Length: 602
Ligand code: AMP
Image 1 (tube, rainbow, N blue to C red):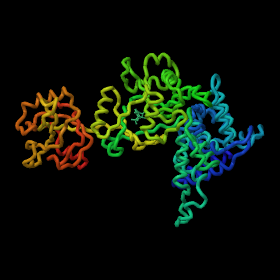
Image 2: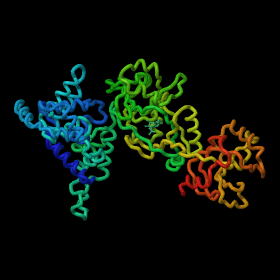
Image 3: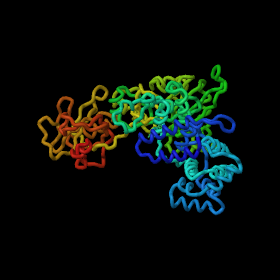
Image 4: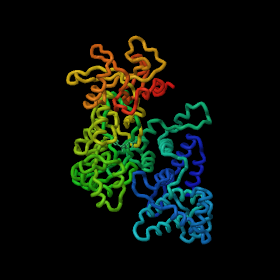
């Protein structure tokens, strides 16, 4: 496909506003590019993968760690040179300041005269998308002495052959500022529409004749999405869809050495997790940097002799292998089958306890002084997922199975996964994680698949209580067994001028009860509370006592619900003792009005 045709049509796509129109325009462009393979230079070329990547503003697929590495100054210089002897890089910069966008600046210069000469002199035809791709890949491969100026020369050469719309497209592509309004979702849908929609499709059933419609089925779109998840390569997926259809897409699989997007988490509470998953997989949330580990040991069985040394990728799929040599050695020493693992690298102190996130950053993307920093900041790898092991793609397996495989391939580094089915058990895990110096816990659906790039509801990062409540202790129950000499459960109240306590309510006048707390209190705190509260007892019935309102405690909770159980008309769900508010008297305790607000009632 001619580069000029692509550049002009891309402008047309950018001008489309409706989503369906954009998708249809992109689909048409892809269908044309897909049909327009040609022969150039060394052999046949296929424009389709190039056009797909260019539309997304990329030269290389997302998993490919190569970059053009051309800075804005270098690009402006190339434009100035191509624009002729009267134009300087400073002029280009001035125009950029006026127009605010490199594409418009490049399009405003007239490269035409030179283009004619260059084309004439070299006998070259018009630029094709494939030729631009090849030139840019060559440019990306430049390294060492003089590489900067060779890159500039290559760009200059391209610009001299450009029409205004080609120059605009090229400048935006090179600087990663494509901004066509064509997102990844649009390209995904357009691939399905261009190559997988059956002719006629849903249009036949449509009443409204001139309403544009997409014809590709949801299954076709899902097949494209799936292939994108495992390959991370829009160009490759488009070709596969065109040549082999849905069945071909289903044949795409993970490849060791080709990173996939990380699965992401939403914020959620323990109650959310228990309500949605029933049984919850609780893991420590490590405060470090995400790392995906790919490794294929050289001698891992027949046909796999070549191998691939451990490669480490960041959450953005940058190759960070060179910065983390001890993780590379650690994996190479322990793993003896091909694997793709997901995990977190954490900085640790001499005792192996985790250090704050900032410490790991001192190591993470480092290119120089790696050995010196290795001595200064020690790292530990915690693996929490296994995407591939020994030839098996595990994305569709439930988390609990993936975790079993993880333990089998790298037991030392596998994060503990604890199953819990009530929020209190989750809270206990969270306390243990916090006590060990970690960030908190992740709550995962043990039955869920691994969905690359997805920020779904199957992984929740536990949201800390947003606001705690300062409540007055107005009663207690004696503990049981070992704790019979101590109070065990405390009745909490808030200030409530307007309540009219009925005869049953144990809250003194001016207070309304909101719940009982028994969780989160250490033995030491319990002894202290008992000692302080025993003298305040004003009434006793069986194992239950009432106090004069004096002590204010801070409590966390999952949520506040309306409830007939307590005189406030609200109850704290899963209250947790945080501590005594030594600084507060009962008049400073929270009021019923605040409880109503926290419950979202006011
Ligand atoms: P956040 O960065 O706050 O959105 O939290 C999600 C991040 O927590 C992930 O991208 C991981 O880097 C990190 N993380 C730490 N521990 C875990 C774990 N056990 N499971 C998943 N992600 C984790």
